[in-house]
Image (cartoon, rainbow, N blue to C red; front, side, top):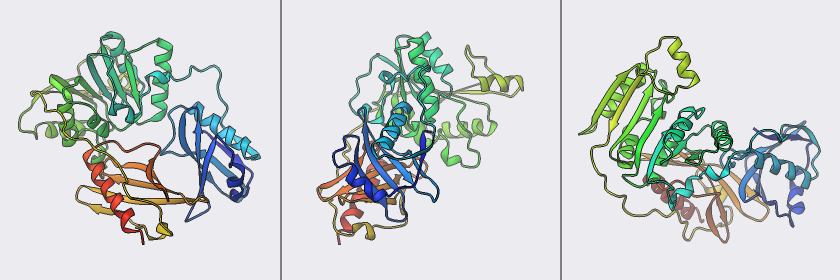
Length: 393
């Protein structure tokens, strides 16, 4: 990913340099070491860049938690920051290709977009972990009356699919660079025709990281319309039997199993497995009920939470574990203006959220966006708020 190596410099001088900057809005240094983060706004995107000091060179790079999907924006911002701060560049990988198609931002959706989104088609289907995007592109072209939402946590795969959407002129795909297990809770009940889960990572040594789970099945059957179908395709014997056990654990279900069925479109990995004569399993789960609509709304407010002197020294250093979720204040950065940028992990153990909280004398908020509005995230948010209130001193 994009970064620069620059000649070592005094990070303390940045505050004076950026007083009139429209690019860099704040700089904060770590309480534990010499690392720093820069709050940057460029082309309507707000995110953090990291400065990693070293004896011979400083690294200016993206922050994983807040990065925008568009790599070009990241590269431009890193270059502009280096220029504004008059940094001496020792090495760079932020060159911007003028020949590659730019990602089609019209079809990239952020998780927060789905709080009040209007679906552009009456029919909606979801693909979880689309990889190369070959199957998703095929389905979208074959079914122009259906909106396809593609979920992929691997950022380069999401970027490549957006480029293909632009090149092929496809208008019925939305790309979401997010964890599907959290995303489904953002969708209304009885929305989807199909949910595709093709060749998920087996995670044999870490089964808690598998996409298929009882909670995922609960959300999938809620989101599917009556008669809609969840389609799992896997080459893993372990995953196949695990999925069957999961699907049959609910009181009432309809499951169909097929083996070595030939599809009209295959991925390059599937083609390789077929040449190796590996077995491929398809498991179809049909939704039998019309689900109830989700009740209530979730608000992530930090009402009454403000920065108080030395609160950063009193916050818990270790993760706090509760029944079904946890909260952890992982790292704290403090700016010369008194603001704290607190990097947090929280939520469920198998699909935690990672966010920054900005704590100031004027109030407290998430940076850059709020967590996904799930029940477990709300419980964790309440504990975060409680801890910030308890440590007022």
